[in-house]
Length: 224
Image (tube, rainbow, N blue to C red; front, side, top):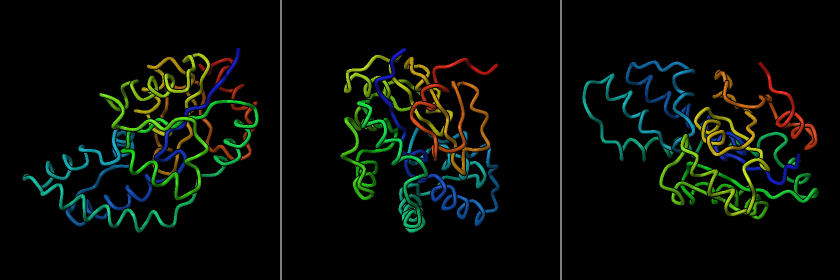
């Protein structure tokens, strides 16, 4: 068995953008007397950087529509302030370096918009680490559809059976599995509550996880 590529999700996997987003929404929900459980919130993630379901929850609670664009502008300012405290997640840089040294191809497959993904990758000096960056604008359907992963595989000329997807959301894991790839879940602080039943393995962090071990747990005997 030969693994030739790693394909990374972005939000919550390379950079924990999801904790700032969760906190910014939580402040809005609490100000309006709404409680959204961790499990319910985490289940929304992976298909969009600004899930419409969050607005739906608020409007259903209030009983009337809100100015979504104004709310988004207000919330994003708060999210960006919180995001300033975040750095690249543990183990990501080391894994990228080792994978490149071993000749693996590297790609990003993200449901977020290109300006967001590439802007943050560039800010953290990661953009040139990848052979391809596939974002929402590049496909007809974002996760949980397989389109993003299929396009990433096409761009790096790799078969699904030769690639491992690294994901932090169930929507993302579903997308990678539908594309025919091996899937490793790497939950973050927001998605740690999810079951991740449709993956080959779950690891709590990429820190101190050698590439060889990552490949072994993805392609070895599956849990029951």
